Structure formats: structure tokens, C-alpha cells
Image (cartoon, rainbow, N blue to C red):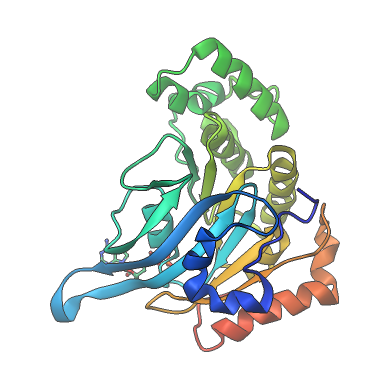
Length: 288
Ligand code: ADP
């Protein structure tokens, strides 16, 4: 894969035809990359009758192995709903989501998740928190401890293995949550506004850190955010959702070279991308 990430045959302006991207996902990829996720005609409805809420409507897209996708949209457009379906925590009302060729119909071991809150157990130290999925899945403790120490080093937490969550800053806690999500080497990493609760400076630092970690590990990532700048900074491809019912309003490649520094945010090419997102969201509200 190039430093810009995989090239998508569904990208750019042609991404506007996202509504039939699921069918395209079935076709062989021009670049030879493998699709990890295929979402086809996915819709989600909460409740019945006149009170029913259509949270997602006809969502179609696919994701190549190692691709970093940012999903951006106004509050209530169904971003969390989409991630819950992909995590196997919520059955879709219609359509399907396929991970590595198998429909997602329940919680799976090949997915890692990071939420806005790090959700660490206060009675477990950093290492024990990170090893929790390994304990639950009964993976070999010795091998997993080695992997945990390696990942903690990757996120800059060497020396903090035996500290407790309350001894860590918010950014450090989210690094622990990220390591916990990666410990079992998942095929897919789902991130639901992971830096939304951090102050602006820490958030920028975490964006740079996440990019560095992603460049090192090349996980397939779906990253939900409210922030147009965060979305563009991190992504190979941005998926913009419209206000309820959530649909794909636009999907486009971000071909800015990597590694990206924060300075890229002040450049014209970066502004072109953030304006493109805002163009879809104008009138939608709820966006930075
Ligand atoms: P986002 O993450 O983009 O803010 P959500 O996926 O949380 O959006 O919600 C999409 C819509 O579905 C919202 O209108 C929300 O109120 C509604 N919704 C979410 N979860 C439920 C639920 N369990 N029951 C009923 N409505 C829900």
C-alpha cells in the first residue's frame, strides 16, 4: 500500500454514487486490495408506526483492507447506530454488513472498539485493563502480555503498566483504551468519537499519535467524528452523512501525503476537503 493508503475505485466525485457502492464492492477491485467490509442497503429503524425513527437509510459502501475511513455528520444522523451494527451490537432492520466475507450478526472477536469514554476498570492497573479482552477470550496470558507491552510502548506508555486509571490524564486513558482494542489483533477497529471529550490541544496531539500508530499497524479503521478537521486529517477517505434519516451525502478520497503534520490543516488543499464536507452539511447543523 502506498503512503496515501489504498486507492479506491469508488472514490472522488464518483463517490457520489455511493448508493450503489455495495454492488461495486462485489466487483474485483482495480488496485487488488481486499475489501474487509461491505455494507449493502443498510437501513435502521427504531420503533414502529408513526413514532418510528429512521436512523439510517440505504447505506452502501465498502472498505479496503488497511484503509482509514472517517465518518462525519451532524448529531443524530446515525453514526453511532452504524458503528453498533458493524460491531454486531445491534441487528440491522434491513440490508447487511459483511466483515471478511461473513455477515455481521452478533458480537465478534475480530473487531476492536474505542468509545468517547475510555471505560477503564478503576481496580485494574493499565496492564490488567489492556489484557481484559485477552482474559475474556482466554488467549495465552504470556504471549498477550508481551503484545500488550509492545503496544503500550507504541502509544508511549512504557513505565505506566502498573499505574491505575485515575493516575492518568484523559489522553493517556484513551491510549490505554486504544491498546485494549488492539490487543487481540482485530481485523477492524471501530472508533466512536474517541477524542471528543479531550481538550483541543490534547485532541490534536492524539490525532497525530493515532496517525503514527495507524501508519505502523495499518489496521482497517472506521473513525466517527463531529470534527471536519479531524475527519480530513486522519482519513484516506471521508464518508459524509446527511441529517436524519442518515444517508451517505458524499464520499471522497483525501490524497494529502502522509505522515501529515498539524500544519497541513492551514493549507489550501486541506481547506478544499473541509469545505466539501461543510457543503454537504450546510443546513444540517451540529458540526464544528
Ligand atoms: P449520532 O451518533 O449520529 O449522533 P445515533 O446513531 O446516536 O446518531 O442516533 C440516530 C437517531 O436514532 C437519533 O435520532 C437518535 O435519537 C435515534 N436513536 C438512537 N438510538 C435509539 C434507540 N435505542 N431508540 C430510539 N431511537 C434511537
